[in-house]
Image 1 (cartoon, helix red, strand yellow):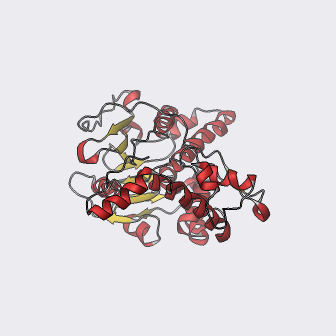
Image 2 (cartoon, rainbow, N blue to C red):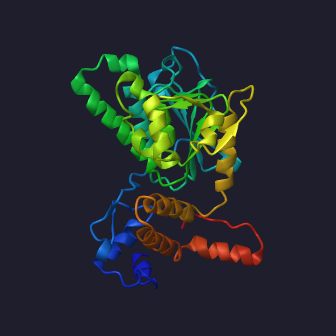
Image 3 (cartoon, rainbow, N blue to C red):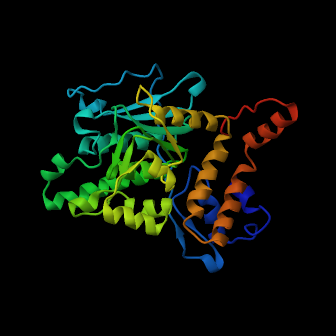
Length: 339
């Protein structure tokens, strides 16, 4: 495939070894980094990590929500692989009611393990992050646990949180945060790492760290300005302001806002509807499209267009592309295999 891409016509057709690295980097499965040729050499585009395969857990009916204060630590994150018409959708359900889904050492460890497992599972098409606890998405850091840490322990632990959130941002498939309740501090940073955010109108969102004489440490100072603009992001962080769903939609922090339902899962249901819209599309195309957008947003337009061309070239030799054309000709739904 790399040879076919290297031979692609246009701006990338004559790239030297540096260009070959660009093409290789645009593979949705092998992307340790990206360097551009010629006058663009030396500019590094952020890594996208696709490594480490796994065997998915057996499917089955959705587990019942658990709100007991006696929830076992291994139940604090529930990984569900949906079946039947929802096959390919994975739901990460945070279930730490006694700590308001706050980011404890154990929860971060479980998130890291789950994300590592999902990175290169080709059967996964979309990931939804939600809460299993009514009225709470994630309240941010576990401050009770944090208060017991020494100053020397705090920095490394925040680095672990940042690394896990970065890994979520670098997942190769679409990710959706379903915010049906409170999302503060690290909880909002977790949502900001997702490609799409949907929320109930009753949800509350904000980066409130300055109230505690610290700053957002899980990527909030970088992702919030990219989502809503620098000036408004500064205003929200400086004031530690909390927005409801309607206000968050108005400033562009979320894509959809829903009136909450009696079950308290309106945002999750919307996220599930979106994920179902994504399922029929070509799996290779979805991964490469996400890569092209993510990498392109970090560079100038000319470089971004070069990234797009290299990523487009990745789809040309695929069986899925030929299947799409054949299905169009035969007037039937395509049967994509991710090949």
